[in-house]
Amino acid sequence: MKKKISYKTIGIYTKDFRLYHDLVQALKKRNLSYVSLTSLQHIPNRIGVILTSHAALHEVNKPKVVAADVYDTIDHAIDKALHLLIGKELYQTIHIGIDPGEKPGIAIVGDDILILKTQVKTPENVVKNVKRFIKEYPAHEYFIRIGHGSLLIRNRIINSLISLQIPIEIVDESKTTSSQQTQRAHRDKEAAAAIAMISGGRVQRKLPLKPTRGSIRNIQEKSRQMTNGQFSITQKQAKNVLEGKISLNEAIKKEKQSK
Image 1: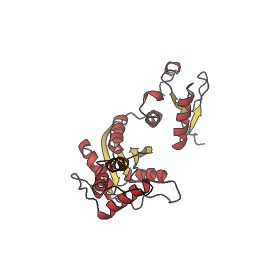
Image 2 (image 1 turned 60 degrees about the horizontal axis):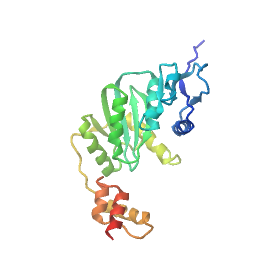
Image 3 (image 1 turned 180 degrees about the vertical axis):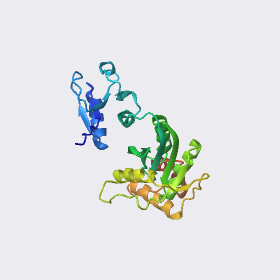
Image 4 (image 1 turned 90 degrees about the vertical axis):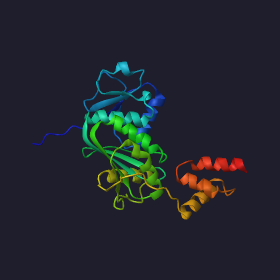
């Protein structure tokens, strides 16, 4: 008779209603199972790590506990909890997969184990998060793999990551895209996870940023839509947006102030 495998899960214990609400929302968004704890006297065996508040930290008599409100974001605290849940303190190899786009997807795969999938707000947020993941998940070696699409954004992301001195590979992502019926954010994260597992061509140096006329016109049209047809930003400002020097909102604000 086969032995039944017991999987551990996350427990939530806090009297801070706002923190509890934020934790539940974030866990549900990431499709992670959890158990709400009203008492610490009888903690179920399946609870592998507890998310709580800094104020209640002293109440939890369990080695694997995370004070969620001391981290910069709720997702960061959950990442730490998942790391403790896996119980691995040092990985041999970690692959960081990136699906480039206006809101890039990022996935972390450690020794063939999918550790996390997330999405960041802008391409410029990628390097900050990669730095955090490296600190959070120690490994003997790291590799960054990024999809070949969204050429200009991809190159911006690559150029921001060069200084980390981690091998970067460009991966053919044509076979990684999830069903078009799923939400965009979910597709981007799934694609990032697939990209992490595919080897690609090594990046040797910073890549050129050369916005095409078509991409410049697209940004100008987008700015016109965002201003309800009142005006569009200049080609120069559109080029700055595409090169990551300024956000589209900032460019619109500057253009408005100049009128």
